[in-house]
Image (cartoon, rainbow, N blue to C red; front, side, top):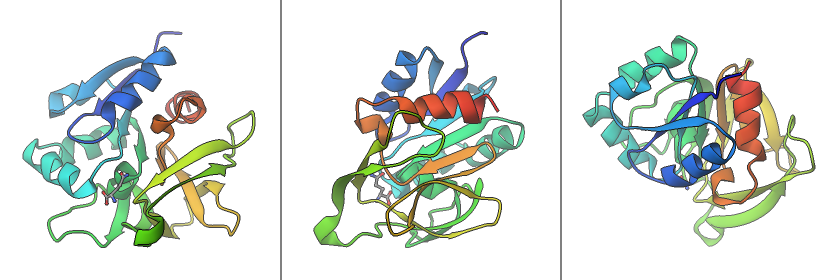
Length: 196
Ligand code: GLN
């Protein structure tokens, strides 16, 4: 089978780390900054970073419509942290000019963990990922506060709090697998979401 063509949105944030991980898994990767770079992609990763900055740049680069259209046409999307925020239908704590991409029937709250614990690490059992829990790196992480009935929880905290969710060809995680040396969540995206 030929390598999957995966774009990494490279407007701001940890896009290099995602690309490195996907390259390591044998994907045919490309950085995406402009609409024509979405052409022919099987999947797209939206990295963590600052969702307000990414939203601004998505608008300036004319990417909102083309990205939604590409997803509607079958392109899988994986968002981590700020990327997950942008994929949601509703963003609590959004800046007035921060338009959601609305690729997923979910409501998400930005910066939902208080200041004192705004960054932490924990282990996260992840359905469909073999070999034990993955490491969850949370940095000013959001919380999924409401999920539509078509949204599946793949990873949750001990108290049931959803940490990674999927709706068809959209996968979103509140944490950052790209900041670890464990490529299993990216492999899950390539094999089970892009390949579905
Ligand atoms: N708090 C950031 C935001 O709202 C997300 C942080 C992250 O991606 N690590 O965009």
